[in-house]
Image (cartoon, rainbow, N blue to C red):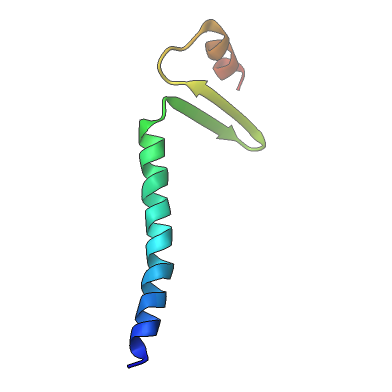
Length: 61
């Protein structure tokens, strides 16, 4: 009879990371920004329209 307690605990500890992962995937897929990472440098630009400044930063990145 006490096994249901362990089952509930296991479901809670498995469901929370899965829900958070799904949330992050949805957030990433609907985002209009791209982040480039190279070593310690990080560059985030809008993926919709690249301005001249964004192009210059990408070339220098």
